[in-house]
Amino acid sequence: MLYPYALITHLLCAIAFIGVVFFEVFMLEGMRPHLGHATMEAVEAGLVRRARQIMPYVVGLLFLSGAYLGYEQFSASGLSWSNSLSVLLSIKIALALSVLAHFISAMRAAGAGCMSSDRFRRTHISVFIHMVLIVILAKSMFYFTW
Image 1: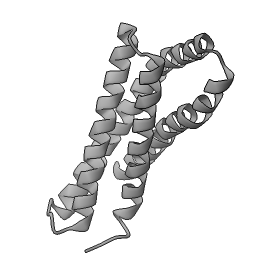
Image 2 (image 1 turned 60 degrees about the vertical axis):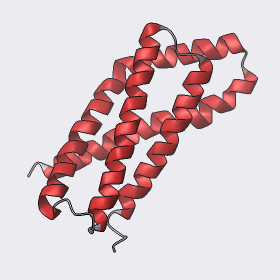
Image 3 (image 1 turned 90 degrees about the vertical axis):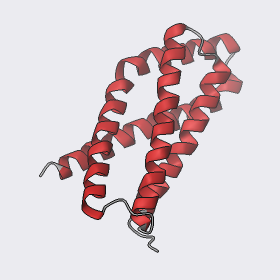
Image 4 (image 1 turned 180 degrees about the horizontal axis):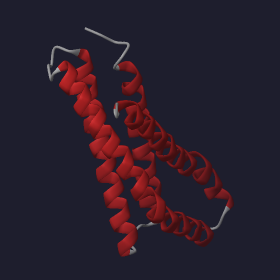
């Protein structure tokens, strides 16, 4: 009974998280050449400050709901490396844990005041690539079998 609510929560949090990262990678980076270095750092600092207020809740719900969904999937099908769903879900989980490590590292760096503009850009590009792969795996899990 809890599964549909966890699934909807997971999808909404994923949309929010990916949307923020998409904005930062494609919109914000496109503004970089048109703004001065000081202005860009001020914009990034404002985004980081706001993200520190909202994103921990989004990421927390994303991972809690994802953990529940993963638990349910592995409980139903078992963990078998011959099962394509298990393999793809395991890769997805590994990528998600890497995103979590990026997120925690970025939040700590921002809190310590050492989130440079270059580090901000590199972190978001890396997280975006991870997120695209996670979305592809999420859809592939139910379509590719071996």
